[in-house]
Image (spheres, rainbow, N blue to C red):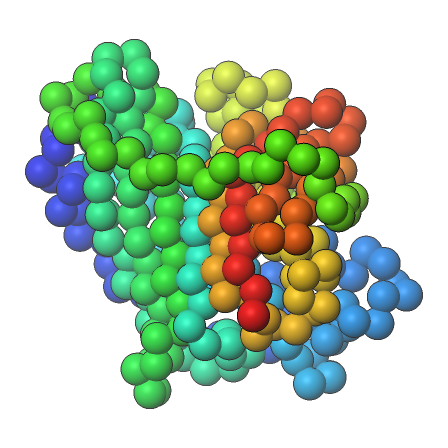
Length: 282
């Protein structure tokens, strides 16, 4: 069982990562760029022989602390962990090469009650190791499905962004690949829920699911294409809620409003997988 004070103050190790152009290219490929061989704009993110650009959403995997929730000392039932929400605030374009420092900490813990799970809020700060420049801050809400009823606080719960009731202004369909989760986990998120059928079954899924952050990468690609014209410095912030898992091989349809609101659904099942999204572009 979770101990509130232990988890609230859990020491997540600082991570230093030496980023290379290969890392930037691999990340772009792992979230689906390059599937259209005639889209020359995508080559700026996937061809290291060009003046390489880095996708803003790569902030979620840079200096990633790994699946630290699986450490028995946390008290978390790691098999039942699901990514609930994610945000990114960009302060500076991400470099394609250099050393980056990531410092992650738990910022909040909400007890939803016995049998109802818990919410864990965490934040990661990314800085350039050489200059100390703040590059980005990412925020996560993790739903601990098996850990409610530990006697912790019941609030405050973060508010969600409303989605317009009008039809979306833009719709973008981007396919995922059947093996995409196996590629994406090489970015540093090796949770077996995304690779091992037996672990997926224990968690209540018929097969391994796509990482929530991979779904985010696909959606962020659609947003960058439509609202930022592939300018990597145009995206200033992004926040969303994961509402249902994506299975590798499904098509993600991102529905976008001109004010930056968005949601996404899988075409094959017509299920909303990302909701309450809000993006800010310069």
